Amino acid sequence: MTYRDRWLTWLFVAPALLLVSVLMYYPMLGTVVESFYSTSFINPTPKFVGLTAYEKIVGSAEFTRVVWNSFIWTFFVVVLQNVLGFAAALLLNQHLPGQGLMRALVLLPWVLPGVVAAVLWRFMYDPQLGLINSVLMSLGLIDHGIAWLAEPTIAMGSAIIAAVWKGFPFSCVVYLAALQAIDREQIEAAIVDGAGPVRRLLDVILPGMREVIVINFLLTTILTFNYFDMIWVLTRGGPQNATHIFPTKIYELGFGQFRFGEAAVYGVFSILALALMITLYFGVQSNGSRRKSS
Amino acid sequence: MKARRRRARRVTLMLLNLILGLIILLPFFWMVSVSLKPAVEPFAIPARLWPENPTLENYVTAFRPEFRVYFLNSIIVSVSTVVITVTLALLAAYAFTRAQFRVLSVIMTLVIVAQMFPASAIIIPIYKMVKSANLLNTYVSLVLAYVTVTLPVAIWMLRGFMASLPLTLEEAAAIDGAGPLRTFFEIIVPLCRPGIVATAVFVLIVTWQEFLFALSFTSTKDMRTLPVGVNDFIGQYGIRYGELMASSVLISLPVILIFFLLQRQFVAGLTAGAVKG
Image 1 (tube, rainbow over the protein chains, first blue to last red):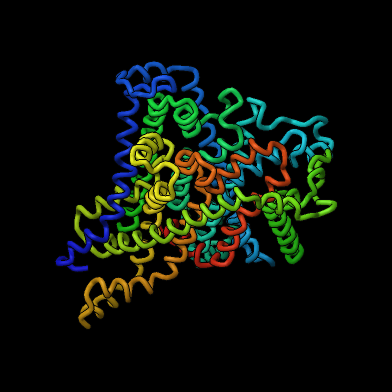
Image 2: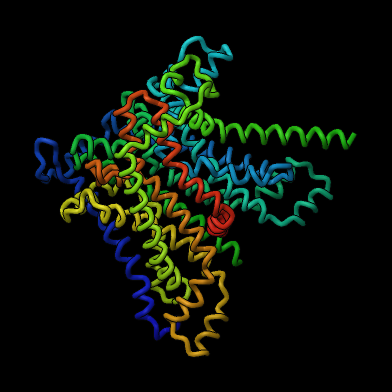
């Protein structure tokens, strides 16, 4: 498009710009405003309360719990999902019979609707009827059913495993594509130099994929932090707040108890956390492109 | 010696492959197996992996009238979203790749960053907007929300694709006297077909499973979509797992089928953007 088509350019961009500003940026301001007001089920008219809700929430045991849970949840899901995804990508990059089929199958958990995956795992974790306890019992590893989702100490771990199963295929496919883009000649040169598979991985493959790995880590961090479906269907944030993360807490406060103001306070903190991650993401990306151009 | 070592390596890799396949497929197998078990069989303790007397009765009961309503709602909302998102994303991505001025690149960054926003953090103001516009329990509210959340990713995917198209074709068209609109519709859009397929499949997968907005915006049974419907089933049918798994299979089938049909284009389109960054 040339300069004289500027009006056309605006016409092309307008719908996207309008939707994103009205339905994403504007509500974000709305969340900040909302956090200064108080509503409840009995008092549905918003009342300005300033920072009262912040004072009540920040420092409360519940808030600390949600921050801590969000950190544990995000950290472990991201690390496990990326490590498992990378390992699977290395495996699928080998020449083996049936590999084409495997590459097609690997994305299945990611395609499966989130709520369905969560329902499925909820059933697999069922203390009496679930597959996991049945297998463990028939192997003689346990003698009575474990309540994977009802035990406060292990519920988060169970949720993390389910989320990793759902999420690692995506990382795997991205890493597989990056592996296939690595220069064959570099790897062959390393083989000629006598480098074993481990040396090749550390010296050639990993440095070559540095950027993809960093960006994928940041992207999965953002997605996992925002991930609502899995925990909501598995545990509703329970037992005793043991699995509440920001998205589930916001939903419960807002739509379960109609405490919009308090939900918005949690919303403001999650926006801040996300803003931090997005800044990091763009920092890394512009760093990468500068390196490429120099 | 060397040959033996190579064979050992191959066997190890095949074993690892088998384990990976098991990790991926076992939950799916379990889902299908339970959905085929007659009503009493899931209660056998310990659970059996294989259905002893497979039957389709769970599917018959799962496909009850309200489920059909949810299914229809999901189709209406998803198809509308895919069509609108892809159209708007094509227009925006074209402007972003071809026109170069500073304000536009700032706008592009703002639009693309929006894909990382936490839906949960803005759900309350959006809910209030939808409510005051009298749009709760309508397709319009869901489609509007879904188009907005999928647009940034769709633009990002298509932009990567369009950036790789050579400018020479457009220049040739301009010399032949084709206006920018004609060039866009008759040259650019057809060339983008693989990118469009990948983007459409992505948007479909995301929309088909969307849960948070659907849960918040719909309260009446006749407007709910499949993910919310399944979530309701958990409470309503308590431990009728056979039925629950049968509906899970029915919900997943459409996206899994489309994914397998268009798998090649989809993965290529998806990873092109992700790898390029």
